[in-house]
Image 1 (cartoon, rainbow, N blue to C red):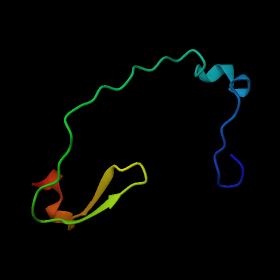
Image 2: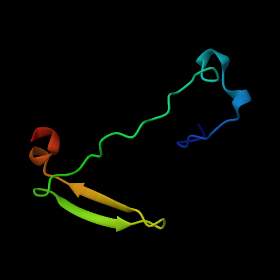
Image 3: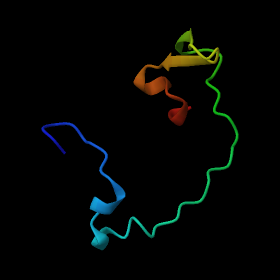
Length: 68
């Protein structure tokens, strides 16, 4: 960390006691997509440079999907 920024370090500088060099991670598998409710949220769609679309949704605290 330099100041408030994290920087990548070369593999040879990773401390051996972390065990990170030997660590293996499973590949993620696609799951069910999360879809927002059709009402109760303010949404904004943005088309990215690669053509994909990102949807931002805002909810009042009590209207969040976790509470519905």
